[in-house]
Amino acid sequence: MPENQYSFDNPVDRYPHIHPPTEQVPEPGRDSELDPPADHGEDNYLGHGRLAGRKALVTGGDSGIGAAVAIAFAREGADVAIVYRREEEVDAQAIAEQIRAAGRTALTLPGDLTERAFSDEVVQRTVAELGGIDILVNNAGKQIFSTDLAELPDEQFDATMKTNVYAMFWLTKAALKHLPAGGTIINTTSVQAYLPGEQLVDYATTKAAINAFTKALAQQLAPKGIRVNAVAPGPIWTPLQPSAGQPPEKLPDFGSQTPLGRPGQPAELAPAYVFLASPESSYVVGETLAVTGGMPTP
Image (cartoon, rainbow, N blue to C red; front, side, top):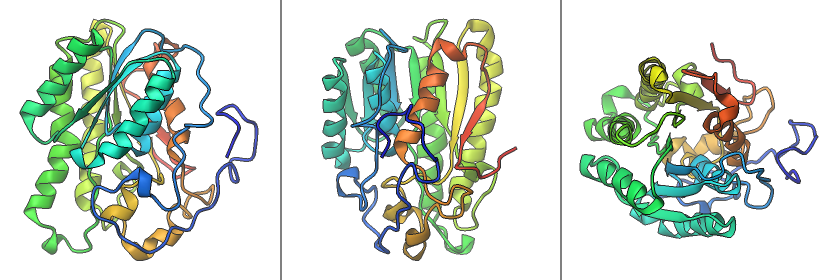
């Protein structure tokens, strides 16, 4: 594990080449039970006030990439609201403690983003309790593998679309009533949008949609001073993977197909989101920033 995100070392060996057990855990999975554990930057993310005074809403902020982003945002000076499923309360409270330890306000918002009313509610509560919103991170995602389209349940396809696409649409629409000029929207897409796996047809479809949504909306909002961008992670070790995100037999080799030969850790994604949220990226609009361990994207 690096001392901090600036540590100079070989990226091939920056984190361990893990070999998770072939065990599937119940969805949605929990970071507190992940084997081996993931790194969210709890012990090594070093902040420099790049988001001082900002108000951020991060969906899926209890675990995985969202948790790493929430920690990094707080250490960069932002107050952070995190949205998560009620079953993930333990993980959410652990991240809220990290936010508060950084001297920032943490707002925890449990619920179901596939319900339109809840998506509206989390934006309203963020504005009311944090005093505004100027960063929206649409990160919550659903991924369940299926080896045969004929056996992919309609209910699963619908839930994946609602979690990954509809919630993004609803949250963004609600947030636009409050986002000021200088505000930013960051969506989480995936390398699956470019290199779709045969067992992730529904998931890959949503990630391609997120790319298109990001680029179209970026053009619409740029004249208003609101920037829209996306991050495309490669194989990142999060609870999404062992909770039916991958076939159990593929878990021991998860991420080994990348040129770096290992999966990424959530902490390795956080700097990309910080960059896109900060004024440093003021001329970056409609971009999809790939963090894939070398897996090629257009």
